[in-house]
Amino acid sequence: MRLLLLTLALLFAPVYAHAGLLNVETVATGDNVDVTGGAEGRVFAAGWKINVDDAVYKNTLLLTGANIDINANAEGAVYIFGQNISVDGKYVGPLAAAGQEIRIEPSAVIEDDLWLSGQVVWLKGTLPANGKVLGNSVVIDGNIMPVGEDKLLDIQAQELELTENAVIGGKVLYRSKNVPRVSSGAQVLMEIQIEDSTFEDEVKAKLKRVAWLGKLGSKLMLLVWLLIAGLIVCLVMAPKMRASLKRVRQYPARMLGAGVGYLLAVPIIAVVLFVTVVGMPVAISLLAGYPIAIIMGFSIGTLWIGTLVFEAVFKKIPLRRHQFVGCYLIGMVIVLLVTRIPYVGFIGWLVPLAGGLGAFSWLKWKQMQAGKE
Image 1: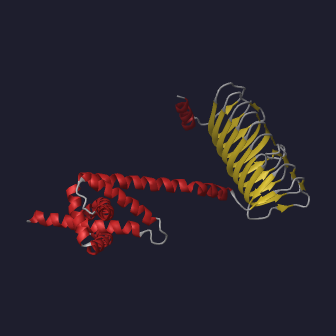
Image 2: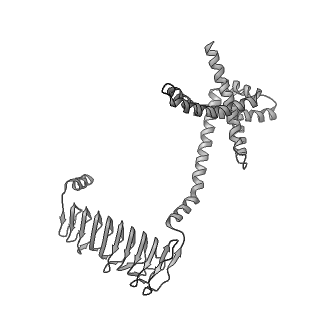
Image 3: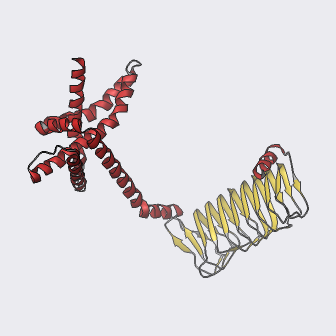
């Protein structure tokens, strides 16, 4: 119900000017919005131009608009989203603002965290050395006060300028490839730390440190998927597997060549058929069956490799389903080991896939010939 009322207010209220101390949530919308008199509850204001007076606002202020001028005595958190933002007054709680141009006015006093993001950011007034500022150009024209030993003002910008009115009394970290411009009259009481790494570099480094988890997870999922698919094929389609294995054992080179040809030919033929309206259904059916053929081919090829080891150890050909499963597991282990070899690891995927595809395509061809007869 609260969300519904807020939506209706934003849609239909032409203008709203709040005056008086209220212990409720206040919604103000319109082209020109004046928020005056203070409030004990939360205040939400949206409009083209928003003005907030210097009364006491004890709870959260949320402002969004094109041009925002705020001169509040705010005790709660303040969140501002707009194009041109001017901030004056006193702020006991955290202040966060995002816009094209943000100006912290000379008489503004901010005591808690400062979070700003804009194209041009002017830092005047009395500000804490606590928070982050992101911008294309940041100008310090005020007093950066110390907050604590472990607190600092983290600034990332293409350009940082310290005017003659700037006083750096707290810790400031400047992340940029460029050197800050410091006026001769600026008072730098605490040296500004400069780092080449930006916020983006920091995020990329953190993502790189955990990227191996994603790669490991994807490889495990692929392994489990292939293992399950292969075991199902071995158990459900044992007679066809025997016929395909027999073919690939008799003519390994021929089946490898046929499998490589199948891998390359099907996508090319499908693209050619897509050009014509008549051939489009055939192309769709070819592409739909392509993943199934790859699964079958890989399962047959992996089983083929496993049977070679089985025959070498036990001196007999596997005929039963449980023997097929054991051979498939042996083949999977061998494939995984070969794929770990540098430069030639792809052979571990290509040989079983191509050999199995060749045998599977031969089997399907024989079935089609038998159907015609």
